[in-house]
Structures are given as structure tokens and as C-alpha cells.
Image (tube, rainbow, N blue to C red; front, side, top):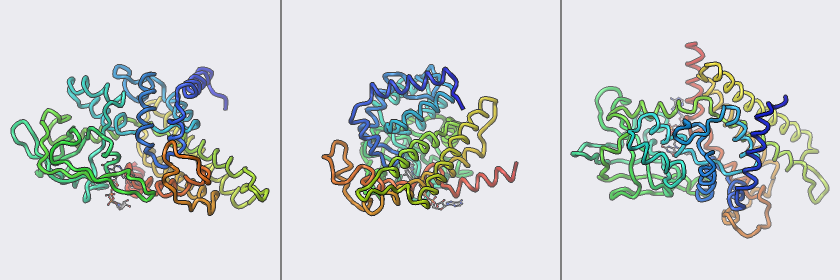
Length: 397
Ligand SMILES: Cc1cc2nc3c(=O)[nH]c(=O)nc-3n(C[C@H](O)[C@H](O)[C@H](O)COP(=O)(O)OP(=O)(O)OC[C@H]3O[C@@H](n4cnc5c(N)ncnc54)[C@H](O)[C@@H]3O)c2cc1C
């Protein structure tokens, strides 16, 4: 299928911009990203470059710094960034707290906070999950009790990605135990490092401290930091989930990743053999290519429907399940293709700017990537929960 001329020109413009503006350090961080969360420093450096160009927030309204691109252009942008292996922009600022402020923030909050989110001057972490409240988020217990013009916070959060790097947090806290659990939740903004706050990083399966626990002991936060009304934080959180309706671009990541795996399989080893000569492996690679393309086409189909006023509805759940399952199968095949040499454990070699290792980047990355990808079926609404949503929507429909 040939691409619309203007879309082709846009693709060329994106490619040229990436070629000219991405530093070697940022590219290296992109190649060495083994998670949905890229290395912090370089991801933020890339964010600043995109912000200067005005390309950092494709889904935001133009008056607040959005690009005004069509959904097709947004997809092309994601494809080209992934093809060039740029570090993904961390979602907390632009896909999570930003939309909350856009939808429910006061004028003063918008004026002060949105520009700093775009530029990356502030980095926000997401304080939602707690030890007893993940899939069942409404069970959260971290309390915020009124004291004059302040709230006093007590409790804890867990799995807070990059809390150790953040200077701000957006959190869901309990302000009332009356009525349904969803009714007593408030959306609050706070500075990191306030007296009584403690951040403890958690080591992940791949050895990296990506998530954290955060503890609150009589932490004082001004009521003016609330987004929306007291006890109506659930409405704000739901709005954020809806904000990027149809904005999924997992296929734009999967297709080039599988292409790179094919290139790896085509390499001739010291015995003069190629992994691709193994017919079983070749067949699995082809199946994966088909699955990646299926994700891409489904995303494009959902986007096309949006243009005609359709809602993605249960397709959002279907894409979450399909995309993350294909991602996990990709990581398994990548591990098999890399073979025994993927057993190397050398986190130092994955540091940005590390001296060359005896192992190739493919070999160093396959195992941490495999380990980290186990989380894909848990975060952003676990796949089991998505299956229930899908079943309910289809049966009710
Ligand atoms: C990499 C990563 C990054 C994260 N980053 C953040 C972050 O920055 N901020 C934040 O607040 N949170 C974050 N989370 C937490 C994430 O939102 C939760 O892990 C997720 O909501 C699941 O909750 P849980 O871990 O408590 O598991 P649980 O909810 O206890 O689930 C355990 C298992 O039970 C299943 N299950 C639960 N309920 C049902 C049900 N009703 N029907 C069928 N099966 C069910 C689940 O599918 C899962 O397999 C992150 C998680 C990961 C893995």
C-alpha cells in the first residue's frame, strides 16, 4: 500500500530531524533500553530536544503545546522514533499528569505546571498503587486528613516508577471512607523530598532499580495542590485513562524490533551458519512478524474508526493484551536466538558510555529485556483484568 504524499513528506521530515538532532549518547540509551522506561537522564535530554522543536506532546491540544498532527502523523512519528531506536519519552508527564491538569487543573496550575512538564524541567512520578491496591485501585488507603489549609498524608505507595529521579508526584489519596470506595479519593500534587517522605528503590528482575516504595509520615501538602474537587479524584483518574483514546502505538515499536531480530538471525557465525537456516526458528520468526503486523494494522484500524466518530471501546483492552503478549513472545525468541551468550550478567556494560565489552549489545540486552518484559502483562491494567473488561463489554454488547 503506498503512503499518502503528504504523509511521506512528513516521514522524511521526522527522519531528517532525528538524524540531525539526536546525540550519540541519546541513541546509545535508546539502544540499551530494556524496559518501557528508558534510562532517565537521556530520555529527559531527548524530551528537551523534542520540546524545543514543539514535537514533544502530539496528543495535547495545540494551544497548550500539542503538535496538531493527525492520528496518522502521530503513528508515523512513533514508527520513525522506534525505527531509529530513540529512547521512549517517559509517560508520566505527558500522558498521565498533564492530561489531568488539562482536564481539571485550575488556570494557575495550568500556567505554572504545563510548560515545565513539556520541557522536562519537572519530572513527575505516579503515586497510585499501594501494597493492597493495584488492580483494585479503589481499595487505596494512603490517608490525607484536613488540617486548616493543608492535608496531612500518612501511608505508603509502591511500584512508583523513577520516584528516585522525580521532583514531583501526582497521587491518589483517601480523603473519606464514606460511601463507595471510589467516592472518597482525591487527586493531589506534591513535591518530592517533603519532610516525612521517604523513597526506597526496589531492584527489579533485571537488576535495575526502576520502581520504588514511597512512605509518608505526617507529610503536609497544601489543599491548593488538589486537582479537581475533594473526593472526586476517581473522576480525574478515569479522564486520564480516556485522554489518549486510540493513541496506542505498540505495533510501531514491534514491527521494527522484529525486523532487527531478523537481521540478527541472518548474521553468519564463526561456523558459517545462520540462525535463519533453522527451519523451525525461521517459521517462528515469520509467525512473530505476522503478529507484529496484526498489532500495527489493528491500531491503524482503531485510529481510522476514531476519525469517523467511533470509540475504541473494548479494542483498547484487546490491543493491550495482544500487544504485550506479542512483546513477550518477541523477548522469548530474541533470547533463544541469542543463545547461551545471553546468560552473561554484566550490568556495568549496559551503562551509557561503558567501554566495549566482549559481548555484543544483542547478547548483553536479551536477558534483561526478557526479564523486564514479564512486567508488560501486569502494568497499565493487568491482562487478566483487561480480559474481564473485554468479556463484559462483548457480552453486554
Ligand atoms: C513495571 C511496572 C511499573 C509500574 N509503575 C507504576 C507507577 O509508576 N505508579 C503506580 O502507581 N503503579 C505502578 N505500577 C503498579 C501497577 O499499576 C500494578 O502492578 C498493577 O495495577 C497490578 O497491581 P498489583 O501489582 O497490586 O497486582 P494485583 O492487583 O494484586 O494482581 C495480582 C494478580 O492477580 C490478578 N488479578 C487481580 N485482580 C483480578 C481480577 N479482578 N480478575 C482476574 N485477575 C485478577 C492480576 O491480573 C495479577 O495477575 C507498575 C507496575 C509495573 C509492573
